[in-house]
Image (cartoon, rainbow, N blue to C red; front, top):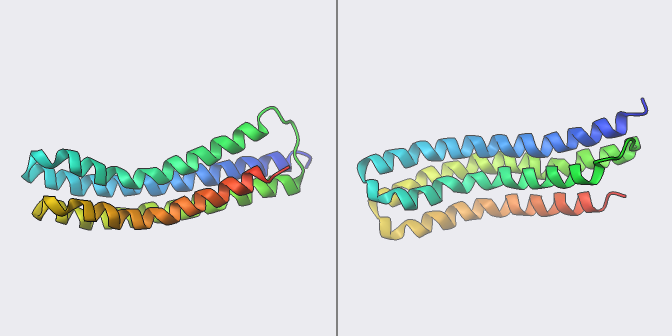
Length: 153
């Protein structure tokens, strides 16, 4: 029972990294499929399609950063209280859960934005802006998780 705090802290790391990573993997996969279709029709659109397809990958980076931050804080600590462990678990939830869903939803915006790139490449920046609107919520969740982790004593 004395190790429950550390187990909960590791669960918080897992939540942050795994959920946000899943959202990004799904998002980049779906976006990459759409990008491949665009590039098949016009290989010169590769550069712009890569930018769009990479956008859902940021959520996984946010989760990874929070997970690493949590790990660095507990590295070398043999014991945490259950309350401290729960704080780490809760701190991983915003970036993990919002990263999961925003990565998936952002990919749908990117897939639609590939249509802009395919038909009106001069307007493709608008698709990046649309995808960036979804990104805002991943950034907000990252900031909250960052504050929560840094508030754990």
